[in-house]
Image (tube, rainbow, N blue to C red; front, side, top):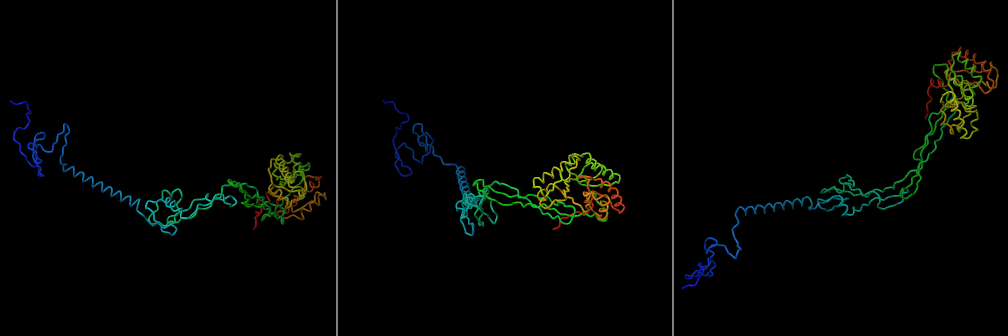
Length: 443
């Protein structure tokens, strides 16, 4: 009688075998050379420890091939990357800086090259005060690097890769002067006045002030007088007598009006078809405005004889300018004529008067023939004086105011008739100038 037993137990005789290494293997234990079904006695490569199972299988050929290909690709990629890094980043190159060979990496930008070499001894410019003193040793412009002779602006330094064998120069930066404000002042113009040689003193060029400057440094506050920065242009005045070519003309002129004698003279001129020029006093223009309006309406020229007939050289600058200005204003108010033509009382208007008031007038009109009618020499004397001195382009001085002018009224018709008989044409001063050769400034 037997006890219950394990049906899988081996009850037969045992035998010993050896494995591939010659070790003794107990009966019932499969050797490494046996084959069998996994899970049964003799099955290869399966060890069971409860639920844990370890499988050992040989890797398929295709998978091993794939691993080899991947490994080779990785090696090739690393090699290519290394080659690229070497060629484009790590490779050393030589450049020449200020005639000295410098070794650096191939990817070195200009800013790095300068920084690592302390700008190769070049210095930033200084900031200077307006007077030239130094405010900041390093406040000027940056150093100036150039590659192949081409200066590189500072904004491009970090983008400019220095090429192999480049020829680089580095120069110190320029000094910079501080910003400044400018205080300007007028530099008065002078007067180039030559009053010799004619009855008409004409301004050929207006004077123009120059400019002088003082600079004030915005940072230092220092002041520097820069002197004249724009030269003044002198006023130019020349004297001449207009002479129309191929003509025989004469200009009758009347001073000191308008007055009660102006109307009879205007009647004579109108009846004879003659145009004349009236140099009127400003205060008289106000009193006899209708006479002055008539002068203009009938085609005569109206100009100024000052406001109240002063001796102008005896006036100071302000009084002179005031009298001339008031005379022009009174004429304009009475007649509507805006003129800059003057006949100074007594003809007295010298170099100093031109300097003081030349910007107010265009010309000062004198005369060629003085009838001396103000002396009341008689109508015949007035007539004869003109006839004896008449010539082409002559300017005749008479009066329609300033005293008793009955002798002028008596002489005027004969003067006109006899001059006309000699072939003279009567013109205004403006017409005389316009038909004559233009006065040119000679160097």
